[in-house]
Amino acid sequence: MAKKYYPTIGLEIHAELKTQTKMFCGCKNNPDEEKPNVNICPVCMAHPGTLPVINKKAIENVIKVGLAIGGTIADFTEFDRKNYFYPDIPKGYQISQYKYPIVSGGHLAGFDITRVHLEEDTANNKHDRGDFSLIDFNRAGVPLMELVTEPNTFDEADVAAKTTSNFAKELQLILWYLGVSEANMEKGEMRVEANISVSEDKNKLGTKVEVKNLNSFKSVEKAIKFELDRMIELHESGKGEEIVQETRGWDESKQKTFSQRKKESSHDYRYFPEPDLPKMFLHEAFPLEKIKKELGELPVEKRTRYKKDFGIKDEDIESYINDKELGVWFEEVAKMLDSGDKTKIASNYITSDYMGLKKNNLEALPPSARNFAELINLVADNKISSRVAKDILAMIILKDESPLQIATEKNLLQKNDEGSIKIIVEKIINENPDVVSIYKGGKENAIMSLVGKVIKESNGSANPKMVIEMLKNLLI
Ligand code: ZN
Ligand code: MN
Image (cartoon, rainbow, N blue to C red; front, side, top):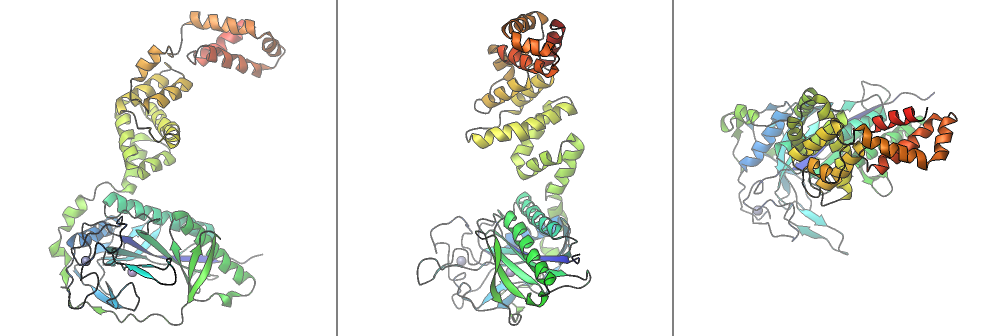
């Protein structure tokens, strides 16, 4: 019987902030700039004698994040120099924060937050051009938020991996909702590092490994799962001492973590307060109450409201949380419908049919809320069949027209008048003597084939319930 192991995960997440200019100079902050070394100046190139100036907007952005996760906004805060040598940081230090981060504490998606601080991003090394390296300084000095979580101990590796990836996703949503970062992981605008360890003792931490290069939520989940399994396997085979404190990368193609460098000793960054920047008193400099009121609706609040107001499925709600515009459209549609049942039907059509059609048709646009609500009314009131509803939906995502008008012109309104349905039913009975005799022979399911033929003959307009009843009566 295998022993029980408790995985512990702690996170460090960096996110580039969306501001007009860089953190300490007036250069443009443009993550999409493809030409290297155009958004640069003596300050972000680390020329001697230049002086940094604080970007107030970047501080405000971090304050917003702090308020959104229920953290404490420091009154006193300052920047520090984090000293280390690397070609992408030619000053010889990164301006960061040490003792007095802007945000302390907070909670998000199952993790306790330690701190959120502000620093500058580094330049970009390009090692892929041959036997030399190039450096692009466009990214140097871009405002970078760093969020650090408390170590979080779980009962199961799967739960640890899933919860962590969900946390990263939730943080990305908050950054989007607050409008403070694009946080695109593939573009490196949000970078996740996970400290991972396992222990047999829930109250004692094992040796931790830091996993980097996680550039999607899927790889966050997979890398953590892989690393935990690797550690547990080493423990199980009596080789627990082979787990060493090290930095590991994630190889997307091999779906494995690999050792990047072993840590001989912990870095001494010799932090000290940045002498070229003023100290800050945030409670005086920022109207915190006002900023808090103006944060807007956060994902967690929106979930609660959608659940309460519309009673729709959790997965539908997530579709609207992830795609704000889709959510706004759904709300407009819901406003035009006169019952909760219709709202649920509308949500089904949006999240399954509309989104499915859109995936296969790039030109598809959401029709006006009025026309979409009209479609839902038609199908919910049995004026058209669900098959016809899907056909009309496929038309109105390309040309926004009235579904009632389409149904009328194309003769698709469900026929509820017995006379005209009866004519079709009798025709189908006459044309299909084999099926009729199978049905009469006791195979009751055979009737469905006749129902299908009747509905097809009516171009989908015959009311299925009525057809079944009529067939049964006529075939006694
Ligand atoms: Zn600059
Ligand atoms: Mn950092």
